[in-house]
Each structure stands twice: as C-alpha cells, then as structure tokens.
Image 1 (cartoon, rainbow, N blue to C red):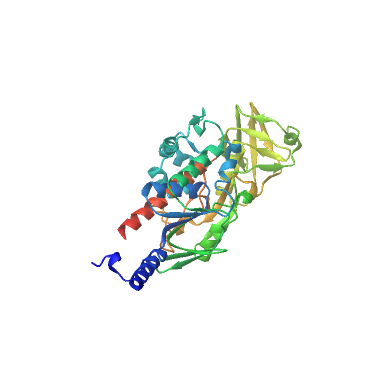
Image 2 (cartoon, rainbow, N blue to C red):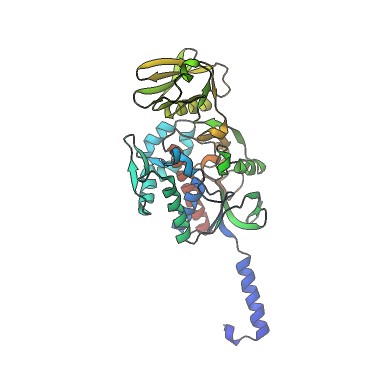
Length: 377
C-alpha cells in the first residue's frame, strides 16, 4: 500500500478530493422530521443505538407543544402496565399500538427520564410529572441529550418536500436538501398549530400514496348555550364528578374525573374523554348525542352541545391510516424506509399521559426497527 506521504502533490490532491467526495456523498442514516415528543424520543433512541441522525424542526425551538401539556406541567406518562394502558386506549387503536407499547411500556419511559436525572412526581391517580411540575424540565432532558450526543438539530427549518430515491430520500427545505437513508415523520397532528403542528406530515404521506383519515378534534371541550351550565362558569368539580355520553336515552360511555365550567361551556378530563369517545365511535352516526354530568351527586343533562375546533384539541384524531403502516416496525407499507410515529398517525388515547406515551413508544419502535435494518445492510 502506498502511504499518503509518498504521493506527489498532484496525487495527494486527487486522493484528497476522492476522500472528500466519498464523505460528502454519504447519506445520513436517519432524518427525523419534527422536534416534538415523538421526534425528540426518536433522536434519544437513535443516540442510544448509535444511529446517525438529523433532527429538523419547523419552529424556533424544540418541544413547543410539550411545554403546553397539562397546563405546562407535562404529564409525560402514567404509572400503569402496558396491558392496562392498552385496555384504557381501546380499539381500534390498541391492537395497532400494542407492539410499540409492549416494547416500550410506561415503566421503561419513566426509567429513561430518571436515568437522565429527571426527578419524577407521582399523583394519586398514577399520572407522572416532573417533580418541579415544569414541562421545561422534560424538554431540557431532551435538549441536553441532543447536545451530549452531538446530534445535529436544525430549527427554523420547515421541510418542504420528501422525494423517495433508489438509495434513500431527498429531504427538501427552503434553502438546502438532505440525503437520508431513512426518514421518520413525527410532525404531530393539527391541534395548537402555533406550536408547529400544521399537517405537514399528513400532506407528505398523502403525496406518497398513503390514505389519510380526516383529522378532527379529540380530547376537546364542548360549547353549549345551556344557561344552567353557563351560570356556573368558573366552577371546577374534582371529587365525585363524571360525564356520560347519552345516545337515544342510553348511556354509551362514562368517564370519571374533573369537570370545569367555562364561560363558553365545559372542559376537564371527564369531558375530554367523552368527546374522544364520540369522535372515535360516533363518527358519521345519525343519532344525536348529549352529555349527562354528575357533579357532587347531582345529575344534570346538558343541551345544545358542540365540540370546540380541532385547533383547541389536546389530541388530533385522524391522520395516516393504520392500514398503511406496519405496527411491528412503524414502517410505511407503501414506501420502504419511510416511518411514522406519534400523532401524525391515526392513534389517540385518553387524557392523562396516554398520548405522550404513544408518541414515545411508537418513536422508539420506529428507530429500533431502523437500527435493525441499518445493521442488516
């Protein structure tokens, strides 16, 4: 073998140019689109598995919606088994997310945060928060992890297009393109669009041949003109409170938990879980539905209800069709090397740490699947 020092100047230049070209024309193994809960957990998993990745986020900072969760306190998971969580989530979502949640159950999620130095607080109902009750502490865990592992983070960087190639993908932004071996779309739903959830991922999926289920509000408040309710504006019922979905005089679903009366109607965990059930199970149904409240032992039917818009919802229902994604890998059935995680998919759970758990678990499964694929090749 000829040593580099034995080469003449022109040979050194040619050899150096070849080496530079080889390094320049090498794809990043994984491009993650979206710096929210799913995207950040995906980057954390890539760091653990030593898979090279690049994180692209359209907003100026990561974790914008995470900072809002649970009124800024961030209920990031719940202290229950994967089996109990799946039962609470219910069908048709539970069957799809079972491989992800079984592989990355709540206990593993909380252990990961604790290992990164996050002190954790458990509420009596099992909901887990940072001990400080500050969502920023959760985002800081991810930020520190990205920094410590040298993971490139591009903020203020909306992805404008995604083009599959024979040997990966071209990820386009306004100012440059990236060649990636695999792509994970983790752009979230349509709720709270100011945080960056504007439907990019659903649009990319649709363009690439995936069916996208109509996005609609889940876990959202209900507006009403019922004066009996509005006269209680400002009241908050925590103990002995519940809400039930009533169809044709029959209670179809009951949720226990907090009920709050707003100037425009109703909010609180019990109401949110009822609207999620309605959006998932009464979609397209002709029979009208209403709510019956239980407030400190008093039963009160509510008239003239309408759900608040999707932009105000805690979670977006709809998204990339589960029929087009392999639940054992989170890879697209349409485009090899393309993966999805989190709320961009048509998955959702009750309020109380379930939806962040789903984002984390599906992201973990996607990146673990990518790692296995990379090592095979």
